[in-house]
Image (cartoon, rainbow, N blue to C red; front, side, top):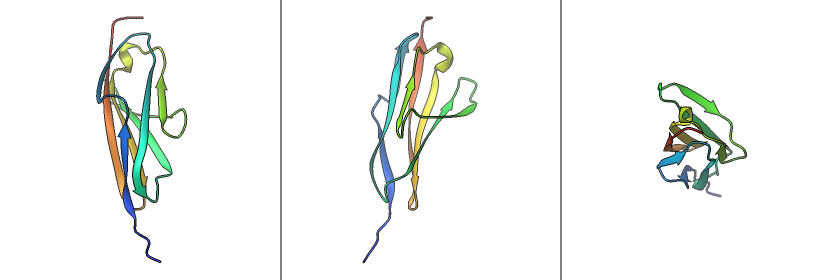
Length: 100
């Protein structure tokens, strides 16, 4: 039997650049749209305004929820997936405006 491995594909369902008012919630979803085998691990990484990298833990396999966002939550959020054929990632930039 022939086994073909294919690098994973993904899609972040939130717009790639999103502006949100302080105090609101935002849901970031990273959907796996392909790959063989399907990735078993999705990681989220956040870069703050000082360009410091932070690993963050999703709510479940693919969703990260930011509650009551504040300006310090502004930055770039990257979703990464990996399988034995390779890896892929996509990102969203969030800008929080105003004060809660």
